[in-house]
Length: 429
Image 1 (cartoon, rainbow, N blue to C red):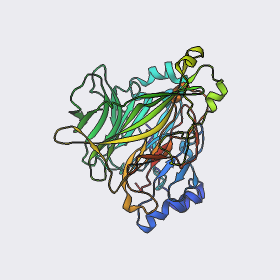
Image 2 (spheres, rainbow, N blue to C red; image 1 turned 180 degrees about the vertical axis):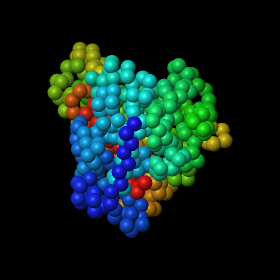
Image 3 (spheres, rainbow, N blue to C red; image 1 turned 90 degrees about the vertical axis):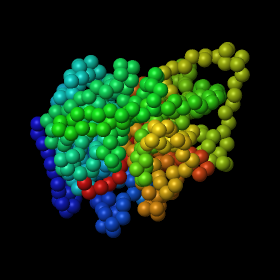
Image 4 (cartoon, helix red, strand yellow; image 1 turned 30 degrees about the vertical axis):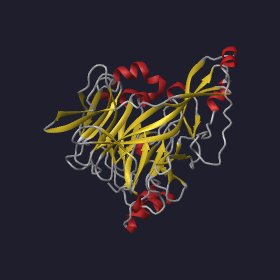
C-alpha cells in the first residue's frame, strides 16, 4: 500500500496553493496567541472538487482551502480530532485519507477493498452514490496519528460490522459484536481510551453492555450503548401540501463532555411529509425557513389546520420525501455506576458541536465569541438518500438550554445525496 505523509511549512503551503491566505490567517491566529481556535463548519462539497469551504464561527466568513494534489477530487466524509476524512473514489481502488489542514499532514489509511463487503458493495450499489452509501462514521482515539497507540475505528456498509486499523496498517480488521437484529449507529473514543458504540436494538433491556475486543496485541474496551427510546407526545398539523408530525422523530448522538462524562443527545424533530400532488420541482427546491414554534418570540406562524372532511376529499397520499425541522434537544448523562440515562438540565460552562460526521464539546469560557450552555447543530433537513438533486437545508443553528429555543442564524446551504458537512476543530496534529 502506498503511504503518503506530507508536512509542509506555512510558506511552502502558501506557495504551492495548499492553503489560501484567508485560511492561514484565521487558522494560525489561535495557535500563535496560544488560545484555542474557534470551531469551523465544513460545508457540503461538490463532487470532484479540489477545495473545501469552511465557515468560521469566530468571524462568520466563508474561507476556501485548496486540497493537496494527491487528494484532488476527493470527497469529504467527516472529521475527528482535528483531522479531515477524505475518500478518493475509484470504485474498488478507492482510497481513504486523513488530512490535517493546519499542519499539512496527509496519511493514507488501508485500502477499502480490504473490508470484505466492499467488493460486493461496488458491484451492486456503487451507482447510487459511490462510497456515500458505504461509509457511516469514523473516529480517532488520539490526534497524534504517529502515536503507536493511535486507533482508527469506523462503521461501514450494513452498520453491523465494526472495523479498526492503526495509521500505517495495510488492512482493516473487522469485528462482529452485535446480534443479528442490531446495528451500530455512531462511535466515540473517550479520553480514557474506551470505545463507545451507540447501538440500536428493539429487545435489549440493559442500556450499557461492556465488551472486550482483541485488536492485534492489545485489548480494546468496547462499551455498547443501547439508546433509550424517547417517548414524545406527537401532535399533527396540516398546512397546504404538508402533513406535519410535531416532535415526530429523534436522532441520537454520542458525546464526551469537557468533564469526561459520556452524554447521549437526542435531537427532536418535526417531520414534514409532502403530498404526491406537490410539483416535483417545488419538492426538490423546498427550503424550510425554520417555521419552528421555538425560533423567535416575534415570529408568527400561519399553520392553517384542515378539517378531517377536507383531507378526505383531497389527495392525502404522501411520497417518500420527508423533511425534518429541529424542535429541540434533550441531554442525558450515562451514570458510570448504574448505566442509567440521567437527564441533564444544563451544560454549564460547555458548548456542544453536533453533526452526523463530527461532534465534540468545548469550554465556553475559552471563547469570547461563543455562548455557554448551547448546542451548535449542523444536520441535514431531509432523508437525502431519496433525493437525487441538490436541495436546500436550514438545519444549521443553535439550541439554548436556558430557554429551550432554536435559532437559525446561519445561512442556508445546498446539499446533495452524497455530500457531508461537519464541525471541525483545528489542531496542529
